[in-house]
Image 1 (cartoon, rainbow, N blue to C red):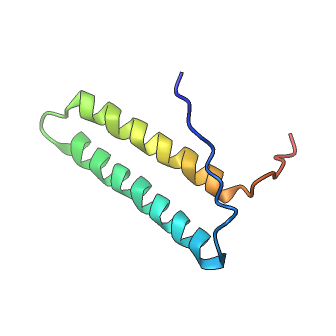
Image 2: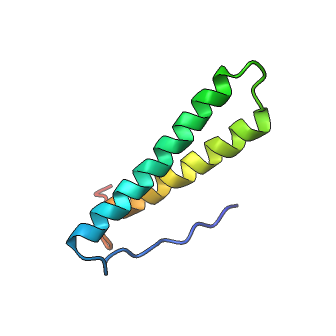
Length: 76
């Protein structure tokens, strides 16, 4: 099972947390662009598609962690 450390962004000043989110969004967007190009290619590389999907998923997890304040309860 893949263990992803839980980054603590609580020490970031006001603009830095937004900058971190922008960077993560750009990474997710890059993965989406690459996936689209790979799917449209005459012979998609299945291994690359899986790698891109995994990278996009990891980026989305990081984005969810960054968006959720440290110690916040999800209410469920």
